[in-house]
Length: 209
Image: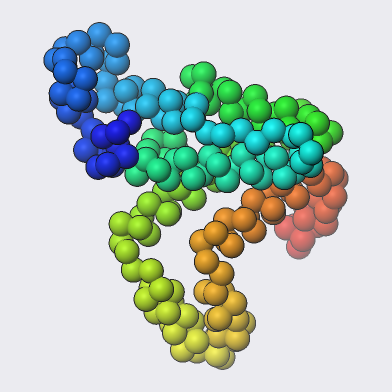
């Protein structure tokens, strides 16, 4: 895990890990049949480090939102590992611990089990994608310069073709990563809580039209 934290997932090979633990690659293969399997176990160990936000005096929404935030920030601490999360279906104890906690919070909020089950998958995808995006942006290290470039491009777009984009250029590019992350978490939780019948008929009619 130290190797990933300091150098990223790309630096991980069976040989490098073997050197870190002072053994031979053949010994590692006795436990992990491939690099991919090794990374899945590392990912699960990271999931096991996520600080779970308990209900206590908090509302279930706040506890769930805090747990999602902690998941993202923990993944970000290990560059590239979140990409592993996008390509695997978690079955190991660390991931199950996280899913169990999320399900318990949603149960406390009266969320139906089928919606809660879908939400666990959605939350895992969102956390991984957000951590991947943050890692990519950090590697590119463009910062405010990139945001200003995008804002200028929006402002200079053809107002006849893109009137709303040009008008909203500052709004589209103003919020920072944390504001965007927190907004998305609130939207996800609001969607989880919404009754499954709310708006579904309207959406079907709109799609049919």
